[in-house]
Image (cartoon, rainbow, N blue to C red; front, side, top):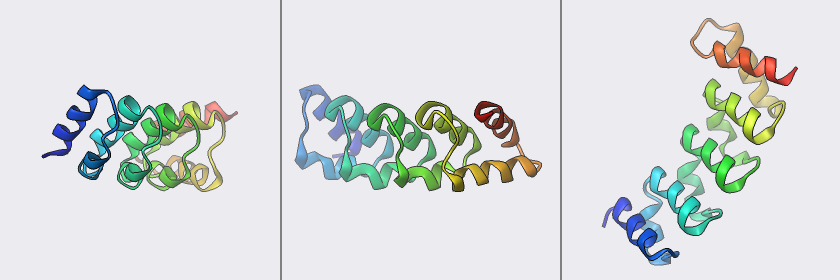
Length: 125
């Protein structure tokens, strides 16, 4: 059974199926969806999987945890767009120091990330 199939089985039943969770955690998308739509809360077993992806980490912090998620901050900090979104939607202010410093470094380098770094700097003023 694939993670997609396991997720859809649990989703169709509308309840948590612990024996399928070991399969679901192999895929970040279905781990996130399982937490959000089936468990309707934290899926601790999948947090290592989710925390390796900036996009799903941001979504998980925003819609599942509904707050700061320190485990995922190192991966989020590598992406200026999701760092900005995390500051705006989750932290609702200045990022933790190491993330903030990463954003400032992005602004000082000529790269495509500085658009979101500039938005972040304006946001925290």
